[in-house]
Each structure stands twice: as C-alpha cells, then as structure tokens.
Image 1 (cartoon, rainbow, N blue to C red):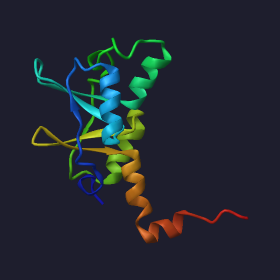
Image 2 (cartoon, rainbow, N blue to C red; image 1 turned 90 degrees about the vertical axis):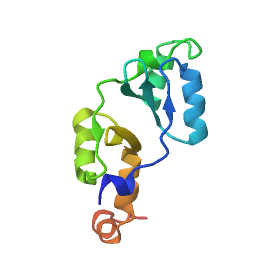
Image 3 (cartoon, one colour; image 1 turned 135 degrees about the vertical axis):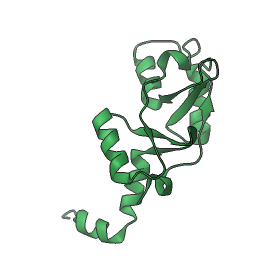
Length: 137
C-alpha cells in the first residue's frame, strides 16, 4: 500500500502570523493534528503539530501572542505519494515525528500520519489476523 492510499487530502494551510490559538481552533475544527505553514515571503513550507502547541502551553507561553512561525518545524521531511507505507513509517520513526507532508510536483497534496498508517494496516484482514492476538478474559 502507498502513501497516496492512506494520506488525508484535507490539508490545513496557515500562515506564519497565525497565533497558536488560531491554529489550534482551525486544527480542531478540521479534526487534524497538523497544519502546513506556508510562508509566502520565503516560499517555504513548515509544519505545526498538536505537540508544538502543547509544548508551548506547557512552557507557559500565551497562545494568543505566540505565532505559528515561532513554533513551526522548518526542516521538514516530505513524503511522495508513491512511497510505500513502510517507507513513510521508517521516516517517521527515524525522525521522531508523527506526520509527513506529502508533496507532488513540489505542491502539498496531503498529510500522512501514524494514525493513517495504522488505519490502513488494521483494515488488511490477513495482516490483522496474523498480528493481533486475542486478550485473555
């Protein structure tokens, strides 16, 4: 199975000046765990995740003053739609993150998350039967 089969095509794109509260509201409304941060001044793409917002709140920072730009991961690892789910999972484990922006011709076309990969793996009957053992009662 490939990234294109698992990725969410709902890509929330925000600007670097969005506050963390604005970003959190948009992420909650769309039910996504990450937003692509597009900086039109630098033509750069970054990612802001739930974890970034949580870390800021945990540090006592004001979500109405903190901007996405200050908490965006800019050294992003991108996936291609034709990557296998194993390649995506390996990149996530190696990098220590849970989301990959999917690019096609340098344009964001989706986001694939650990949850997306698990959902695809769990829906494959032969893999589920081999990997899931019943819990004793």
